Length: 211
Image: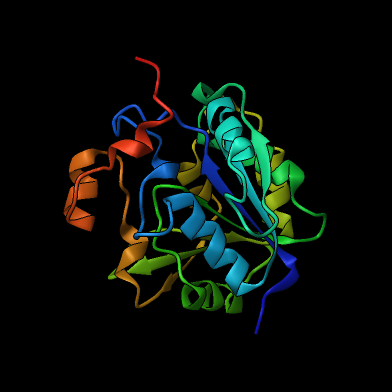
């Protein structure tokens, strides 16, 4: 059963991927999809009514100029100042979320989201606090927030705010799930090689981080 139009997602992909050496959104997940294609495809397959990707100018230009990069509706939101951090990117994404929707959010370097995982989280939806998946007691991604929590996060204007600290302060629900992939956080070529058993493909270096 699909999620329906009342569910949105925000994927954070505005960073410059300096440690990776090429944009993490364009890393190969499998033979036919990149990280960003895999993530948006899973949300589309699950029936999310709105898929939002927050990205920097360079990635937005690449995605916009690549014909049929996505074969389903994806909204691109540009963070023109990605150095402001993930909380600012999340607020930009939440600004575009359809009023009244609950919302998943996650980083682009956590690519192992699945329809089963999203379904479990949605079954535990709580409008007043976040629902965070955990594997063997360790929290991961994606995070699900209801309307009230989304409003609190959107109204947070502290330039030094961090998503993890904010969530802990609100008393989230940690939902134990059978998916070890929620813990993946792929930031370097070494971490990519360890998880996927191959090196980063050079063709995915088309968007170079500033050096």
